[in-house]
Image (cartoon, rainbow, N blue to C red; front, side, top):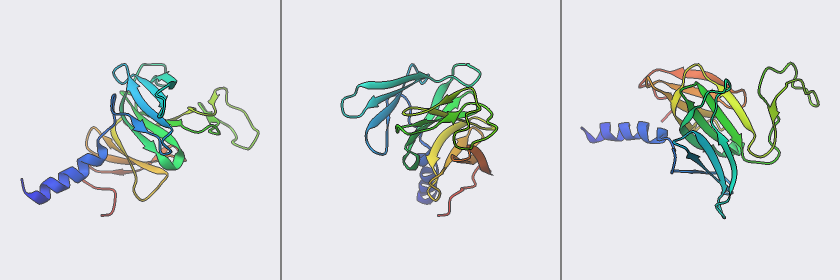
Length: 182
């Protein structure tokens, strides 16, 4: 294998190396460490200084089916942790600041300030926001040119750009097509 080919392969694979159980992901401010427990089926968030467990949550899809995490990254600009679930096509963004939310869990008629029309929502530290995808993803990385987007690798090798503020896929790239300018 030529040196150039080796460098190219590493530049594609390394950014998509998922953090899984035991690896841990540290929040951007260094306050929290998120790990996965129970073979990737439980999120555990601990105080980075003391190691005290502050939050523990089973990774269940919206329909209640148990999931496991296949990738997890910190999203510094949003003060959150992003987790890719499998086998459902779902991401979780877990807030790491007290003023987070409200994150509504269903359809909302109006997002006007003071209007509370959804039945279920989460607010505050460790509030979860679900992002539904068209297909499951296997790895995540921050988009280097857009602080509100992440890139996610699918099992078929394609890459999808997900805009976190609107919680939607906004662009898909074929296998081998690199979505970021060099």
